[in-house]
Amino acid sequence: MLALAFVPLLESSTALPSALVTSAKPREPACEVLEHGHYVPQAQRFRYADAGSVTGERFEINDVRFVDQATAIPRTLGQRFGIRYRLGGLTQSSVVVTWRVVYPSPVRGNKRWEYSFRATPASGELVQHLLYDFNIASEMVAGRWDFQVLVDGRAACSFAFAVK
Image (cartoon, rainbow, N blue to C red; front, side, top):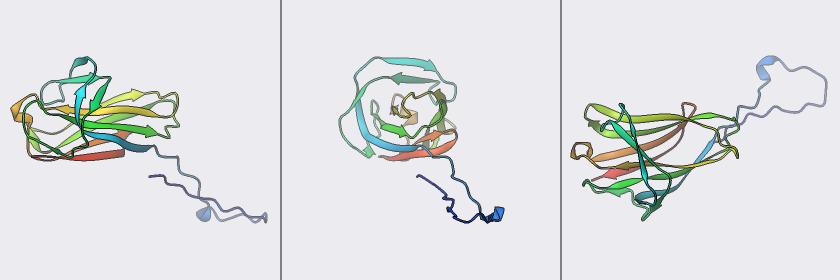
């Protein structure tokens, strides 16, 4: 995911035509999925109203334990699944991180869920979870569920689950 352009070093003082001069592109953040599959909460969940979600709410939790590295998720109530990811190479002091879950078919008229927030990682690295719980029967649609992480509107990483 790292894209660089190199400017050749010349020993002569001959100027290059501007069409031949390139500059380094800004370093893109690296994203790595550290864990995926079913999880068990290890801390209290906090509820927030979220008009963009299919249930009208979202939850955040600070600590979970992944119990397997599953890619197939049963279509039953109570399933908890998701990813733990690490964003590295964040050179800006503040970035906008977007979580996106794309459904295989619309859920209550929505093709996806999206939530953005500003993060200021002091070390240039951010480790977080993107999780989903099946709490309502109507949201349990079979097919490919894509979990995506974007940084400043650009795709950083994604992971697909097969809900069966």
